[in-house]
Image (cartoon, rainbow, N blue to C red):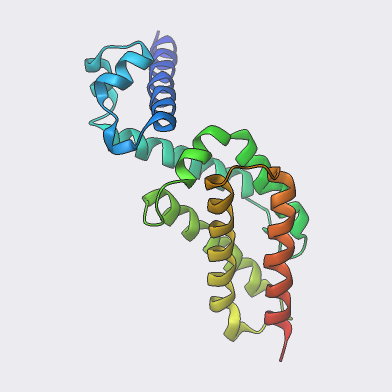
Length: 190
């Protein structure tokens, strides 16, 4: 019986999150109401409040879900310090697999909790990989990490906010070359 209840809870929460994402496409997050989410999810407002205290909690739940996906999918990856194409292929796959929610979350301003958490996660991962590379000047690691993460997320935010005429795979290859070319020269030069 508990299993059945758990599936219903999961299904209901998924419907609420999907309704919220659909509404994010239509309007600014601050203008979305619980009533609209309930109608779109085909549940009562009370049901929404059974799971979430408000809009910001739904958004935070979505953000955490996407962060968990990035963490799970990049676990064990060097994130491009040895093979940039593989790392950017992985990032492209994660984004493509979660395009609708990534699209909405990447459009948020730079101070959103999602972007702050995602950038911090990637800073830690990239720093760990740089420290392992004996050819890299240890005094330059922090600057390089800031450069890579800032450039990476600025570039992807640019793509998400553009008309997206350039395919994501092609865009990722360009960003890969740009970020890594500058990084390698900087980190190895004496």
